[in-house]
Length: 379
Image 1 (tube, one colour):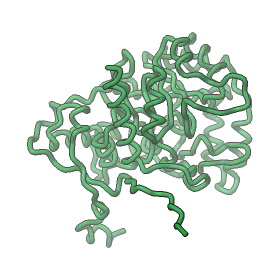
Image 2: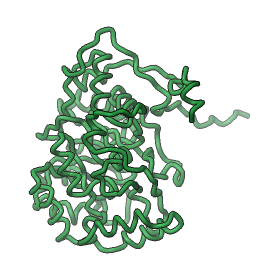
Image 3: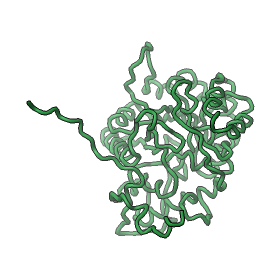
Image 4: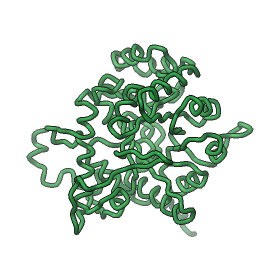
């Protein structure tokens, strides 16, 4: 008798398991170009605030836009369900841990108001900011035309896992190439972690792809569903799809690594793995301007039947400007993220993000503890 062939597994890598190799040439950090482009819009820093209620409200979107970045407003969160979102956010932040999931399920059961979608978009636009908004695939047909007409600049279609081939009982699901033709603004779609899914999404005409399933600090998808790929491997696979699509179409579709970041070194590794930009949640939730008041929670947390998230206490550590640009006296890498990126590009000899994609990396399982016994003894 022949033995059955077992399922083959390949090794995948997360941020803590790799390190960036310095280049043979170095350049001054201030000479690096870190611009990020989506459609015809260009941002001076490649950082995007996540579409999470603890991170992005209209005020935060305006603030980060003035600093050169972008924030995505969740059109299915408290901002569009309540006229008084600040009161609701305070209620969430003050709730006991034992009651938070049931409270969130109750809060997010309130219907979404189309009038508030228009109002929030106009508030961001009136503040002189670029307005990006996020909706789930199930609500895209209903809300995308409203958001576009209200003046949104970027539309993000986001769920835990998104593919171009979705099987359902509905007569006609969401067709991304039709969506791209129907709205006159760039469309970003996520999330995915594989070469094939990323390539197929790009072929629909979308303008960007979010990469990452379950790595966020407030997300429990990997624990609840067992689904996900570590971010370095996911980013590398999707970057390969981006490059393959560029070779076949001559159209460059950026990938955005979404989730799993705690400090600057991880951002730098994401760019070395092939990211064009990063989406940050818990890091930005620590900003004084963040609406979560020192807390952060996953947007799948209030699911009525299968919650996949948890509220975490991230604290309030600094202003958004300090987190992005410093100055900082903190040595753990959680502030001056842009300075860290420019510095690593300098030591790798990369004058642009695309050149940073060529930086070498090595597998380094002990890189975070190597020679750190004195630091570890103080923990």
